[in-house]
Structures are given as C-alpha cells and as structure tokens.
Image (cartoon, rainbow, N blue to C red):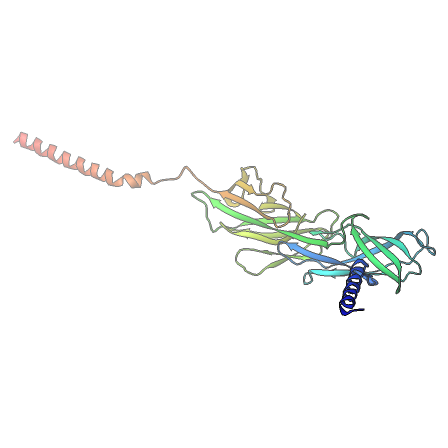
Length: 338
C-alpha cells in the first residue's frame, strides 16, 4: 500500500471516529441532589421577620419499574432554608434516594413554613413537582432529576420568592386663624390593628416632635396605640408598619375624640375644620407613605379695634377748633359792644 493511500485511509478513519463521537449521546452524571433557590426581598423600611421554609414530600407515581408500584418506592429527603433580616437568600436541598430498578419516579412537595402568617410577608405557596428518571447505563443505574413549579408541567425550578412589605404613616397638625397660637399643642391618638389572621409580633418604630430618638411599638392581641402632642407643622411619623395594618387617628379634647365633620370642638375653643387623608381606607400597603393632616382654626371677627382711642387725635383737633371759634366769637362780641 502506497503512502498516499495509507494517509487517506487514516484520515477517513479519524473523520469517522469524530462523527461517531459527535453522534453518540453523552452520558449524564448520576444526580444525587437537586436544589431550589429561596429569595427574601423587602419593600419599605423595618426588619424582616425570620422565615423557615421546608417541604413535605409525597410519593405520587412510578412508571417502568419491575420492583416498585403505585406509591411504594423510595422517598425524598428535603432540607429546608431559613431567611431573615440578614439573609436575603437560601437554598432548599432535595436529596435523592437509591433506587434498585429503572423507572420514572414522581413526587409532590408541599411548602411548610415554621411561621406562615407573619403580617407583611407574602409567601410562595406553590407546590414543587419532582421527577426522577433512573436509567441503565454502562456504569450502572444513573439518576436524572427535574423540578417543576406549580404543576407537573409547570415552569422548571426558579426562585422561591418571599417578600416583606411595610409602609409609613405621618400625622401632621396645622393651626390657622387670627387667634391661632402656632405653639399650642393638641393631643393625638393613633390606634393600630394588625391584619386579620396574621401574626404581628415584631417591634415597630415611630418618632414624635422634640426627639430624634425612635420610640418602639409592640402589638398585644393584634392591636397597639401611639400617642403624641402636636403644635403647628409637627408630626407623628410611624416608619415601618407591615402591609395590611389598619389605623384610626383621633385628635383628643380631654379623653374624647374630636368630631371630624368640620365643626368638631377641639381644646381651648379651637375648631377642627378640616382633615385631609391620603388613603381613605386607612390601610397600610407596600411602600406606602400615607398622610393625615388635621387643621385647627381659632378666628374672631368681632375684635375690639380701639375706635375711641384711634379717633382721639381727631376729637382733640375738633375740640381745639371749637375753643378757637368760641374765642373769636367772644372777642368780636366784645368789640361790637365797645
């Protein structure tokens, strides 16, 4: 065989080998685990409550197995994740069991939160559907795994997303009128109620005039009360109420709430003439900046303006003129008599 023919056969052999190599499917590595990312984001101020997520796994079905049937096959082992104010992401780990035969094994995973009703937290309640396919290879039985969200044919696994949402409430005083004292303080009460069916166990914060230090709010049996006294342009600011909290603001005259119909009798003869509310529902939503402004007026139209005092110079001039006139009249009379 000549050199050219030898080289040609060698090249053909190499090309054929490369083509066969490209056509042959690569064997997947045996999968031992699957992971699902968990994210914990925030809208608004405040401290996120700690949340622990786990999953309860249930065997659903098996196909193509000579050993297992129905739901009688190896179970999954799931390790949950904890996220909190310092941890914005975590990972749920699904550990696959060892199988004795080929087959397609399906599982349904239901989320289980240690606390599943924190106020302000939006939970991801979608189920996960896990399919493990066990194939016979030259290396023995090998596993591949796919995770779907929401349904068996839903999106392949993405992030499990939790979100904590808070809003802010500002209560402001405005004083008007010609007798309105802008330094006078009026008492206020803000009653807060947590959303029904939700736990509200955190510590929340507010500020009052005259202090830069934040005060704390603690709910008891789902309610809390904030009080403060406000002069003109002063505000009570609650910075981090969980979404879903409702509020009821009252100006007080003694222990009684002042009517908000425009004629309410406030302390010391003032009238609560106007209340401006940015949110008529008085419910905190994500990243809210709700405001309520209370206007007190004290005006008097019948003011003693000091008319007599102000006319005194004119009266004096008129009086002087009268004296002069009398003098000249008397002088002329005396002249006529002479």
